[in-house]
Image (cartoon, rainbow, N blue to C red):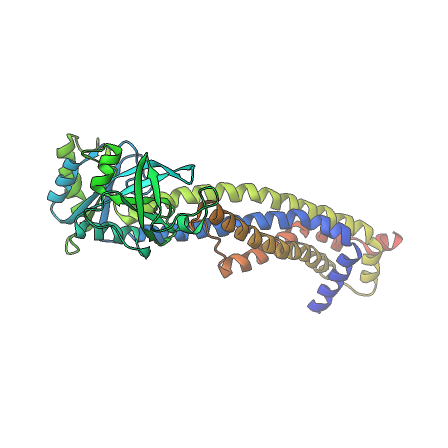
Amino acid sequence: MLSEYFGLALRSLRKRKLRSWLTMIGIFIGIAAVVSLISLGQGMQKAITEQFFQLGADKVTVQLKGSRTGPPGSNTDFTLTTKDLDALRRANGVELAAGRLIEQGRLEFNDVERYTFVVSVPEEPELKELIDSIAQVKIIEGRGLKPGDQWKVLIPQSYRDTPKFGGKALRVGDKLRINDQTVDIVGVVKRTGNPFVDNAFQMMEPAMRELFGLPEKYGGLVAQINTNMDLQIVTENIEKVLRKERGFKKGEEDFEVLTADEAFDSFRTILNIVSAVLIGIASISLIVGGVGITNTMFTAVLERKREIGIMKAIGARNSDIVLLFLIEAGLLGLVGGLIGIGLGVGLGKLVEFAAYRAFGESLIKAHFPPLLIVGSLAFSFVLGSLAGALPAYRAGRLPPVEALRE
């Protein structure tokens, strides 16, 4: 019996093709927007989660307040100093600690100028290993940096794979200028998906201090803690020694000590707010689409009064008429949802591809979990059915005699 209802509903929609397509526009635009936005938001959250938890449960970062939304050490005030690093190393529970410089540098190659970040690499092997493990640095061509590399640099993979300098890409062995200083490219760092690492040039700390004139300053500090000690206790120890070194009272610090969980919570809150706002905007189209379905179904009821009267005259119950119109409205939503999901998937992939081509990064990735697809389809059908509920109820309440007069 139910299959017959679906057959009747489909035949009715096919008879009014143009009206059906126009009605579905609002639905598939809304579903496409919601699917693409949710997929991009979930993909970005997944990528950021992976990046933050590369930091590890046994590592913390120290940075200036107000710079949570950037990568560790991405603030540009550089008020952390070598004395702060020494104090951090004295904190009970800290096994290793390293500082990192980060500056924006002017690149010149093939008569083209570009700007990007330049970051430092410690000379001490154990500190270099600590920094490399956090940033997931892997050399895919050439060699890594070593002590004594005065004017040698590592370039990110995106600068090797993408011609960013007048149609030319950088290669191992090329010479370029950073802030008017000629440097040699000795290695290429594999793309990680972290937009900061994937666009940063790396050079040894002494050379970078000389190039940028930064004698005793750091952009951020990283510490590896003793895993046998409680993370919260070690964090409090770090805050205590840094407050003493920097001359701040408790609660007045200009710095913050972040674990991977705390840093990620900050980003997740921001992402959730942005996603909610964007999905709210996209939902306006769904509301418009629902109103369109309601209007179309009211029109269908008026046009098909005689058909409704005949059905009732041969024994159809009010519930049969209501169910028929509900299925018809639901199918409008379902087909609109199918088209919208296809458009949403395509739009999400297009944004991902455009971001990769523009930035050479893989942070923006569309993620389409099965629940998103199935949920969108179910929501489309339910939305259509709800939008058609009132017209369906009106159709079911039509007196047979009055309907046949039409």
